[in-house]
Length: 100
Image 1 (cartoon, rainbow, N blue to C red):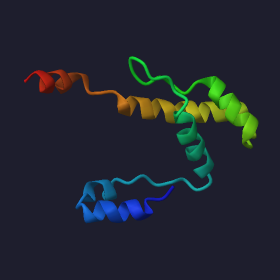
Image 2: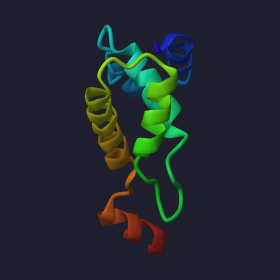
Image 3: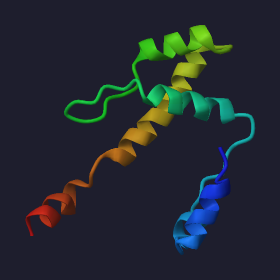
């Protein structure tokens, strides 16, 4: 979960803003980010992105080591809420840009 080769590609493209704003991985939580990205594929897609279903988290916990399921759900839900909030289009400007 490092920028690695992606950082080099961004630098080659001159995308320094992304490089400056790259997130820092909190040591010891790599497994949580991996779980989140794996679980993201289970979300409903219809009128928009839905949250990661609790059933998908339960199946994950059955197959991977999860010490505290309640804490796992809380952490995944938090990551998911941040992710979903950043996926919503801006209400202002979005309509204006399309119509103007």
